[in-house]
Amino acid sequence: MARDGLPTLRIAVVGTGLIGGSVLRRLAQTEHEVVGWDPDPGTRTTGTDLGLSFADRLDDALAGRDVVFLCGPLSSLPTGLAEVVAAAPEHCVITDVGSTKMAVAEAAERAGLTDRFVGGHPMAGSERAGLAAATADLYVGAPWVLTPLGVPGLPAFRLLARLVLESFDARVVPLDATVHDDIVALASHIPHLLAGALATATDRSDVRAAVLSLAAGSFSDGTRVAGTPSARTTDMLLNNRAAIARRIGLVRAALDDLVDAVVTGDAERLLSCLSEGRHARLDLLARHTEPASREFNSGLDSGFGSGFGSGFGSGKDDEELAYLVELGASGGCVTGCRVDGDRVTYTVLRPATP
Image 1 (tube, rainbow, N blue to C red):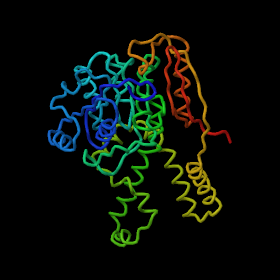
Image 2: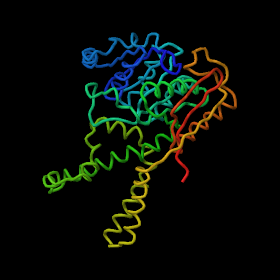
Image 3: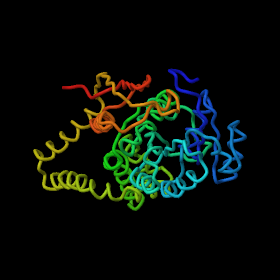
Image 4: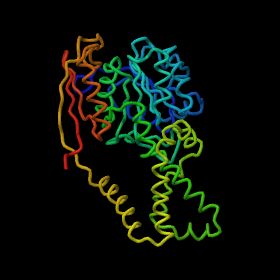
């Protein structure tokens, strides 16, 4: 039995690059029984050489599993989900680690998996790639988004929330899938575009060598994610193109304001624009949260044990789901989830009231 009553689970990690490999390496240090699988035979050999448990066949990896982490390139996730569903037990809870959520959520809904698929996005990473770059502590302290597909997904959400909190020491951020994609467009994906634009402009310039030799922290910080493997970034950006299109206008307008103020020599306007951005940056560095808790009646026991949670269908379940997604959208996170019979209690951090 894992700590706080979560049962020992049989878990599979499908796809073991940087993200999936880090999931596998962390779970290998816990009480849970975990096995990895990757479509690349060389990766499976590398994993075995590292002392990790790997199966040679996908169906062997999925046999008898309670939880599956579906990892791999974003564009492969809907197809990968269908392959996992075909081989995994009917009770198995499935999550993914993709940085966009709508495409795989729609695939799960089409497959009738609203009760046992919960999209996931651990928001940590590296410019490096592959299992050799994976680390067991990649997600410690990181926000880990979970996106339940409505009320039927709450029992699976509760299980995954406890697993993420207890095994990865991460912070669970519950969100609606569409809201998640809009948030990461501004928080992650458009920054990749901006970093790529600055690095590409430098590469095309006639002062490239001098820029690279004199570049200080601002250039290094501003272009860091441009070092991410380009195929991975392309996959990520194209899979969130709708949200990027919705949000890029804000960035263009802000940049136009700044550039126009510089070109016209409008010091007052430039100061105002820069001060607005500085305010947001300082808020990022000085965010304060305050603890809170909330208890819900979670219905009748589901038969999976105290780790999985309970049944669903009551108005209280609607209230629980609304509470969770509002918490995430407001900048809060779940730090604890305890299931006692028909009660579920969340401990959370909310942004402090100014």
